[in-house]
Length: 147
Image (tube, rainbow, N blue to C red; front, top):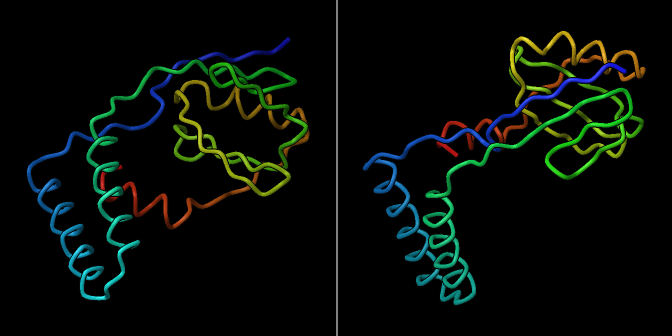
């Protein structure tokens, strides 16, 4: 049975500098001013909660997650995904596996460069189509912002 196992951080961590914090706080101050000007108390409360969450989650460091791919399933930590539920995949820059479920949901999984060909071999053997996929606009924006 062909199987590939690797460990990667759950997300890319970008250390934030002083400018990042200042930019976030200015953005949220503008949101609060707009909410106050519009007399929209719900948007004001939402903005305060969002600011607290952004500042709290920014400090979170990524945990190391184990990934396992075999001829029947993809395992991410404790969660298993049957390969028969995927319709296409793409390996971007030999460091990211993009998978699309038959429901249209996309998954982005970090991989090790030296495993890219083995991963491609396992997935194509299961008749999952290898097809270029682009990152969503939201993913691109979040990456530029350092999330």
